[in-house]
Image (cartoon, rainbow, N blue to C red; front, side, top):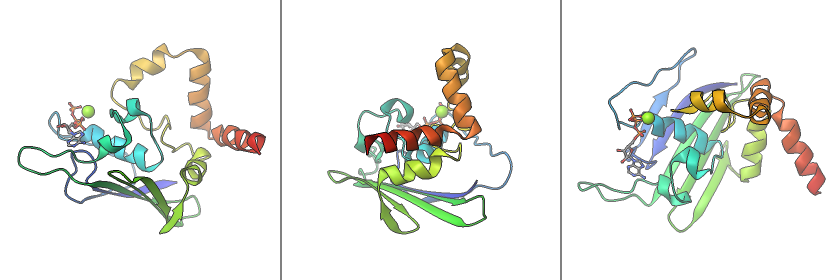
Length: 174
Ligand code: ATP
Ligand code: MG
């Protein structure tokens, strides 16, 4: 699985529509403090289904929407689009959108889907919102200090077997 392109509109500090091509290999994001580097990583997690206020540095669901500055008025929605090539080389386009007062909606290749469908797509790929491949600021210290069970979970995600647990839970509920 390969990330190809990220598009943001109204997400946190990315108030105007912005597009970033993600080229093969290692991608570095550089810029002064507060320019939005961490917001970019959070956008990638968010479109893959992340809701944890801690991971998103937000209080509530709508806090990811551009809140306005002295010079600009707030936006009423945030949308992030992530284009991915899967392991067969097929293009997949994920969209997540949240509107004030209207909650969060997901699309895969233009089709409305449930949050669970998005989670299942990524659960096997070790590229999900909680993937250890996405290392946020301050996370390294956390990996070192993690309890053995937490570290096992990180390794399972890295190895791509955590999807089995998601499916088992799903099956147990039926
Ligand atoms: P550092 O180098 O300090 O880690 P950074 O490049 O990672 O900085 P971010 O944390 O991504 O910067 O961006 C912080 C900026 O995003 C702040 O200016 C903050 O006001 C802005 N921001 C976050 N959420 C919103 C929002 N909902 N609406 C408007 N601006 C926001
Ligand atoms: Mg940062």
